[in-house]
Image (cartoon, rainbow, N blue to C red; front, side, top):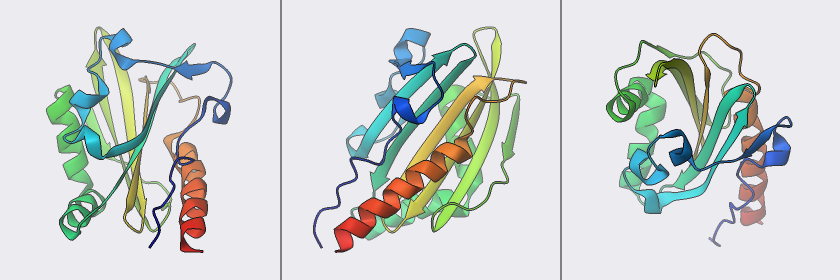
Length: 174
């Protein structure tokens, strides 16, 4: 099978309402990307974008399973969303609240979780959705002020990225 070009499966500034721009998370005192994931070399298409008014951060990235073992590890997120909550807690601290979100299914499989975390003196809602097709899993994270509606939902971003993933996989199959 030819290599799959997944370069289009990422969030672009133009996909979001005006006011979003690329950001290095360390500017907010948050850990760098390489501190959030176990194997940064396995991650593709990492994007982080911020809107300052209202404050909202969008992160997306994807990973491809290169082996059966990696595929099984990926599937664990879909089968056990609590494992995602546990990973967020381990990396970012004990949440004030946590929940498995009810969202429409995207792609072949998907799951979503939400936590409320205190960063500095402010509470933030972190919503994370993971969806997958074939050997690809796409992660979308939206962090916004707790109690405020997000400017763009994690579901809407995931639906857009799934359209791009479908197109990339279809092109590779031809």
